Image (tube, rainbow, N blue to C red; front, side, top):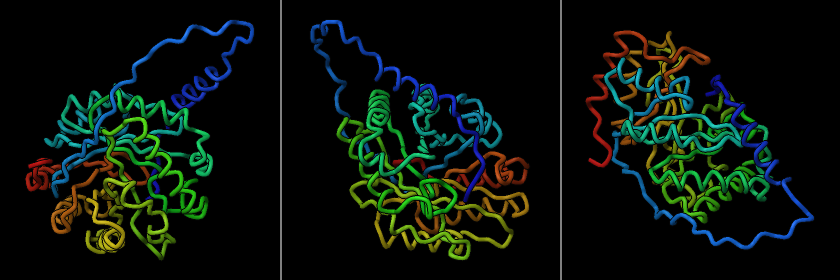
Length: 320
């Protein structure tokens, strides 16, 4: 579902400017410097995250990646320390290594939703942005710990420039494959690639995601985004059809990559339903969008907190 987010545009502008300045810094009348021998950081072997069913609880909080305070406040309020922490990254925004380190220090894996807003997917696939992506891949490799990356999430929805009705599925697939291949070529083996779709809703014009599928070898996990808007909504009819469509494409592990319950939906009941649904379908877990967006999705009542704590007790630890 489309949600309102704060975009850290300044970081993207700084990164973009840095790239332009570096490209234009040329002294035609100077002799070339003597070659310098450099040693690249070692290529990281693939480091798959554990894919234990119903073991991951993640969160998005306003203020990330500028600060980790919102995440620690979430833990203090709910008693649950998330294993995944999400932030949304604008195109040309660098990898936030300091935030990733803070997540790792709190026992969490950083999960980045890279948003190619207003950018030609064909240009990405053709290599126009390889300088940016190479710098990003090098930073992720240097970080050295597991990172989850998702590119162009909810592409089967119509609300993003890279999505349905704005860019072709073929262009998306080509951009996705190019990005994954480049990262792997540059030795960023610590990335879990999460292909994230929106729940199917044909009445609202959100089709099945098959045309955007890049292939098993380009994906590690699959993410599904969906939210509870009404009291009558339940996990099986909300997520079940999309889980079935994904299972027709791949057997890769599935994570509910973004979810929440609107105030009028009855948050305590929906939280209980979410935990039960994850267990029933054998999914990895979920990420709760704990912010005030198109709705106030925050877990902000004693009853909702109690339901969240109770549900968390039914989950395992990753790798257990």
